Amino acid sequence: MTVVSDLKLAEIDLTSGELAGDGYHQRLAEVARAGGEHAWLASSPLAYVVLDRDSAEFFLRSRSTAFPGREIADLFGVTSGRLREQIDANILNQQGDRHRRLRSLVWAAFTPRAADRWRPAMRSFLGRLWGAVEDRHSCDFAAAVARPYPALTIAAVLGAPEADAPRLQVWSSLIQRQFDIQALSTQLAELEQAAVEVYDYVENLLMMRTTQPGDDLLTSLLSAEESGDRLSHAECVNLVLNVIAGGIDTTQAQLGHALRLFAARPDQWAALRNDLSLVPKAVEEVLRFEPITPITARICTEPVEYRGVLFPAGTIVAVCSERGNREQPGGEEFDLTAPRDGRLLTFGAGPHFCLGANLARAELEEALTFLAPRMPGLASGGPAVLGGVEGIYGVESLPLRWT
Image (tube, rainbow, N blue to C red; front, side, top):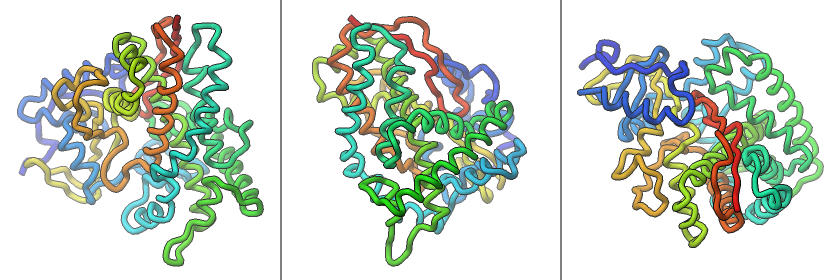
């Protein structure tokens, strides 16, 4: 058994600018090709990078690994305060019985059926946002649609005032950066302030729903019960914060990438416009080809043996969903009509599979169904401004035009 630190591996620095922008796909492919005997694994200053799908699924599903949110926070000195409180309480950082208990209590609020009931609201929001840009035949799609749309949806799902959606969007974007190494080193005060503000906001929102129940997620969480077990107040607060943090920034990024991909491929957009029954496949292809969490981390909580390699306890493994998703015939090509095997890593795998996956899919499906007939001749209106891939791989600006 060879200890992973003794292997001679291809190297890549996940914290450097070499993975910035759309070219990061090529860089990861180069690293995988350079790996030789251990092409499934690469070395980085903070972690070992897992590059193939079987290995990714193994580390995501293993009971001997955990999300290293606390360890990353410690590394950057986030040891107290509201941000640390959120990191400690984040459902991603829960393990074993506690994690299973929380998921079992709230799962009913995140089923496909639960997501579907919000589709009419999604269509209404899209119609309103589209009305502001329709006659211009061009816009910054990120600002005009991709950013406000999921914030409005999450406000509706939570039962929050619609006017609060812009604040929810800002808080989501900032708190999600707890997973971004660059942001933790440069924006810590800003992230802490966002955590303070959103905790106060959620407390007030829950207090309102306690006395004025509604048909929304807040009321569902307050009444969630299984075999006599209920969520505590603190658990309710932190789950709502998880929904705000994880349900807006992620979907806005994925929708932005969807339109960016289609704008560069007019034949694919035409195929979708001509046959809207392809929308579910189009969503899956976007999720596969451009995952907005291209790299996610796990830490070995005990020694892990895999493929003849020993990963000692404390080893951080960076799981590359981008490479795993493309590991199939024609996987390097974006093609919504190609046969795919459905093994996506975009929402994770194993016990921490994303709770909000059904809602995200519904939002993306409604968006493409609405936009495809209304944007003939979709094309780029200028260079897109893309974020880094260390946390959420976002689209900061996306100029588009249509005929």
